[in-house]
Amino acid sequence: MEIHFRYDEELARRAARHVLARNSRLFVSFLIALLVTIFATLQRVWWIVSPFAVLTFLYVAMAVRQRSSAIRAFRRIGNPDVTLRVDDKEIMFEMPSYRATAEWTSQREIWRFDDIWIFMLFGTVSSYTPVPTSVMTDEFRDTVLDAMRAHGGRVR
Image 1: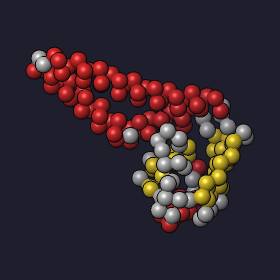
Image 2: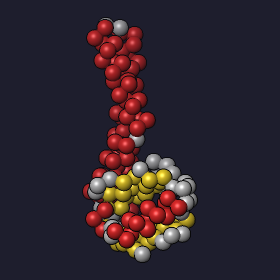
Image 3: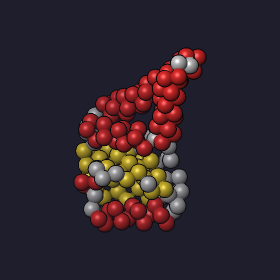
């Protein structure tokens, strides 16, 4: 079974926003650094304020950099039409200049959101492919979810 969609800049931006929001380690670290900075400032413990303020700034810079690199990567490939084929054994992404096929394994991960699903074929946040839910049929969703669960993949 296959679906087709256009990979545009808006899709890339939404995916980057979702990935940053769900990257819990980055968010929790940022929140702790921010709270320590605020608390230390209120207590006038300046030797604590400086390093945690710098840490907070670094976390924000890292988030901005991650989002910017996702947008730059999109701009390098342009606005390709994407074909996504799935069955119970494998998943294949195909664009005019790129084709990737991967078997369903426990390394695969999918993050589901209302507007897009983010496929992480290599189990890492640094490499992902967003797929808009508006182009997915119920049969497509069921096939993907059944294959992920059957092979021990992670669905969030």
